[in-house]
Image 1 (cartoon, rainbow, N blue to C red):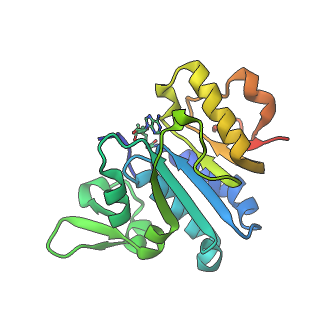
Image 2: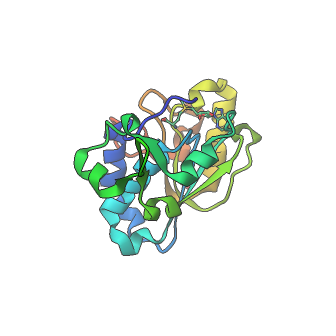
Image 3: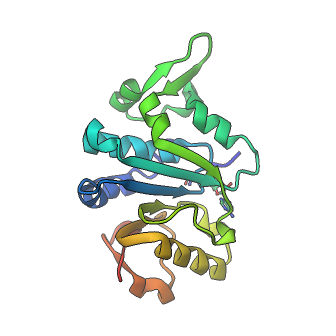
Amino acid sequence: MAFTYFFRDMQTLEMIRDYAIPTLRTKRNIKVWDAGCAMGPEPYSLAIILRENMGNMMFRNVKIFATDIDGSNLFQKIIESGEYPRDQLERIPKDIFYKYFSPVEGTDNYKISDEMIKSIKFMKHDLLSLKPVSDKFELIMCKNVLLHFTYEQRVEVIKMFYDTLIDGGYFVSEQTQKMPPELEEHFRQVVPNAQVFQKVV
Ligand SMILES: C[S@@+](CC[C@H](N)C(=O)[O-])C[C@H]1O[C@@H](n2cnc3c(N)ncnc32)[C@H](O)[C@@H]1O
């Protein structure tokens, strides 16, 4: 199973909250792509951050495409059920946990709210196909995936993200993933201490 957990890299989520969400709030349709989402903690953490900072009316405009190559063939089932064992939810801030999760009777599992489940559409997808799952994304998050690719593959995948973002759309990766120099002029780094970029045209 892929390594992932809820609210992994809180610093980057806070940057999304502070820098991307104020722009997203002005949009009618907010399309987000979480590429390499594993079994769901990352797209659900993102959905919670968006919901917390947008309110329920505006959050109805959010659609998160959560995609993964999914070698286990299990991610869709897990993400669509929204159920996770208690020990996988320990890192979630307590107020958020009690607000969004409820116990599943007869198990040690907790289920995330239907509002969160409805905001996410899982699709099996290979990033190396270089075919985007949709277009006109406001925000693309791809963390701890690109490091598995060759340098040339990383450049091609980030180029695909660039082409499928709207003008001014955001691309987010993990702290250790630097932007390849040949793509630097296509993106503006929003803050020096996180890999949060805005598409430049
Ligand atoms: C370490 S996990 C990262 C999960 C999550 N993004 C995070 O940071 O917590 C890496 C994920 O990348 C996915 N992956 C690897 N190669 C991929 C590809 N070519 N296309 C799409 N997903 C891929 C794996 O299946 C795995 O779920």
